[in-house]
Picture 1 (spheres, chains in turn blue, purple):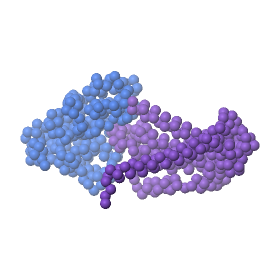
Picture 2 (picture 1 turned 90 degrees about the vertical axis):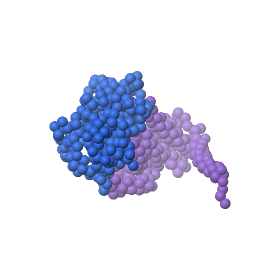
Picture 3 (picture 1 turned 30 degrees about the vertical axis):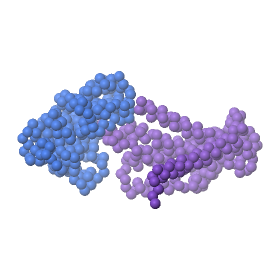
Picture 4 (picture 1 turned 30 degrees about the horizontal axis):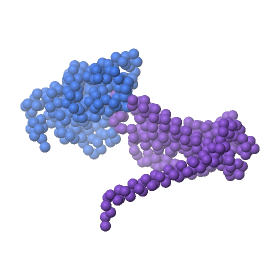
Length: 251
Length: 279
């Protein structure tokens, strides 16, 4: 576990009586892209939202097992949740720009963390550049983010997460509503970003995982069926269910 | 026999348009009637001079001031309390039996006749706490009266802010309080303003609760402990005592114009606020 950024041990998540995740154990390596694939309802999103404790917001959530970030238990009572979310950023499936300007969206997180005013402009530019959006919006930073196209909004959400300078980036099907060109831009950004960040990419698009992920985990009905390097998962899967899913033979 | 949809459609349009028309007609008739009778009396002098001879002659200046100060005081007290309660109920508590009881209580409070609030204010603020008939007693009483409206409308407005906004804010490392201040309240503001405006409207037009708590003095108040008379009360006294029908209508006209102005300003401010955030 030496090089693991996140260590998950026997993680189970319940919403009321419903168990959404059972006994998931894995090590998420540093500075790589982990692809998480699986059909709808397989627990991918639940898994992702456990890593920044966003599931805490839903009533009746119950968690067993442990999640360690750099060896520290994130569910420990003394662990700072707000600080956790600053270290583990998230991009949601649907782009949700806050109803404010592009600039204000990007600096939302940094401002809360008390980043100096003089640094904000620079941060806006580097974040938007990293998300491959700068050239399209540099002349209208103070216009509302709501006027951007869907693909631009999603890249803005990525920039907004990058501006917090997190250590881990969680992406929950970030390209589900996007056209192929916007998708390519996001993927391009991700492959560059992994040099600095640990990235977990949940996707419904198995081809996307094959394209950008270094490692891939396959989830089914709340369980992690298989976890290995992307090439192994897609060429010589050990489990028959994984094979069925990645070859598209799945019901 | 089934009536063809073509006719039911036409009938529905006719009924709905008719209902709208009747509502509008009644409203326009009342406003037109009052303005027609009242406006001839209104002049610069009527607005800005003191009444003479109990209001039989002279202007309405002190009651104008009363109608501005009293609702302002009531809103200044009720808005922080009401919005605070709404934020607490929606953002800081899970839906339990206790919150349901609180909500039910607020709804009941909203339905209590204003004269009851007047009596309560008289007994509690005027007599027990010894504030006398005063701006303060009146403001506190009106604040309690409009509190339920402000709580409920603010609550609805806050609930209508998409859940995804909150999630985004939390995921960017905001605390609950920062999320409330930076995301929830700005987006709920139009709804909150609507609730507050309803409250202002009720304060301006309230008579029963005000007579019992703020009194009838026809002087300019010098302190919060002085009695004031609002335009609505002035109108009531003028008509009830048969002092001056013309001045009563003049006062009524100003009252209606004031309510219109307050609403128009509020909506103008609100639209400017929204436009600034989405341009």
